[in-house]
Amino acid sequence: MKIWLDALTPKQAILMASFLRELLKHGYEVFLTTRKYEYTESLLRMLNTEFYSVGRHGGGSLRGKLLADITRMRMLTSIVVREKPNILIAYTSPSAFRVAFGLNIPIIALTDTPHADAVNKLTLPLAKWIIISKYVGRSEIAKYIIANSKLIEYDGVDELAWLKDFKPDSSVLEKLNISRREKIIVFRPEEEKAAYYRFKTSYIPVLKGIIDYADKIIFFPRYKSQIARVKRVFKDRIGESIVIPTTAIDTRSLYTYSSLVISGGATMAREAALLGIPSIYYFPLELSINRCIREWGCPLYHCREVSEIVALAKEILSNPQKYRTDTSRIVREKKSPIEAVLRVLSELN
Figure 1: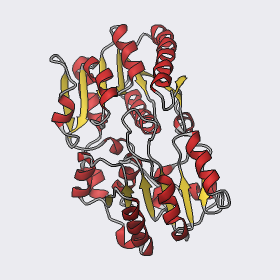
Figure 2: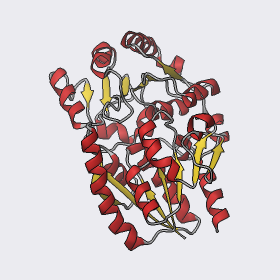
Figure 3: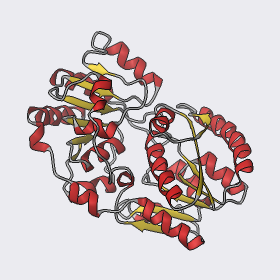
Figure 4: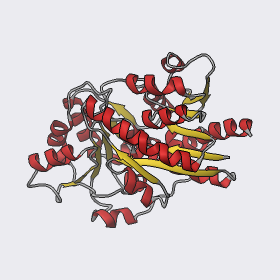
């Protein structure tokens, strides 16, 4: 059986790279497609994962997103017709799902974003199997699923696919020219150009509020416009107080040596919290999967207002060790989505 994997974002890239390694171990043929978008390609290179780079992100406008997807669908079609996969496994990728559906290729979908309404409408009705964490909320996803599809839940979260066997590597500090003795904040701004994002941007006020309380802020932008804005606002502190990596970095190791992670999304905050590192996410909606991770005992905090984020960040930075948690049992006992994927594939075989 030949399997097609598609990854649109850095989170999906590290997930699909983990899938690819496991699927090869189980004797499957696999190929991976991605697109040109922030750290996605360089992350796959860092993970020594071969891929086809197909298309690019469409930017913040609806017209741009539509045209980028149309172009990507044409390009994907040529590759997929040549590769002849038996099945597609992907997060909710409109271009990949439409190509697979048009070529009669069955789809295994994964998602943890019930709030991404437009993308869910374009993808989940086309999938034959939908795999979700049991903590996402079945009812929130079920409304997108048609009668003949199968919704499969697993007892864990996506991030465990690449955290279970993780061992930190201190060389990440040398690459960024930082020291273990420094108070380091890993910062990821909000996904302001996503179709679902209809909220105010907060990353500049948050950075202004915390910059004097950390030795280094490692800033992982999502878009070139965020790089430009940060460089303009903090022009005298770039490279000294704020470091902006130009290529993918081993963020899992970086979390280990950091005092705090702050994210306008959720993935980086969840990753770090699952490793026991105090993490704040300021995505405006309270996500059920994040609430469950907190209930497991992981140090994941939700703040909506800039003043809340800054106050909590100052408190954590005053004694970072106090907020760290041993999460090894959670990582060991909870499940990865790869197990659910392998079950579906074994049934097909």
